[in-house]
Length: 212
Image (cartoon, rainbow, N blue to C red):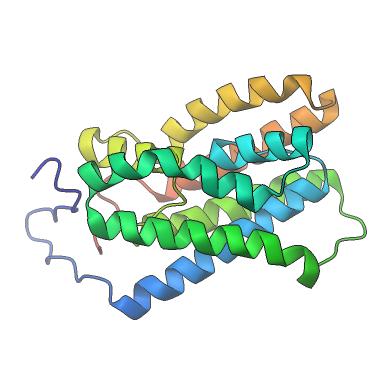
């Protein structure tokens, strides 16, 4: 049924088997760790990415406030929307993922110190890591809050690809970053964001993944 948030199997295809609690837990931990590593790579090279993470990096560069703290606060407004449209299980898993992500980005600099990272590598590998991490979360009915919630809802409700919707939103965020980044950093940020969203658009299509 439309609006239920649950995938529907095609005729002749077995009904999808729900993920177990352990399945969801490993996806939440693994997905958030991948995203935090990707964001750390981009941040170490002075780059930005899209979504709420991109906004948080811009605010971090402008104010010096820790990325994880900004991310947690900016993710709060869409929880009411997620609870109403996508259900309490999605909302609770998303809240858990956001808490884990905020914590991991705070702790990661103490565990991993990058003396030097090539900006192009940071952009491309950072985009891949963030994209794969988000893909793990999306496939386990979770997200990292913010615009991810809206993208998942639009895909499940109207069939719009989450990666393409996210790409449109990210384009606006990158335009806003022009004032803070050098031209080369901006172009590399654009490349990383494109890799991120292509990863989602190609691998998270409506109807392709049936388990829930």
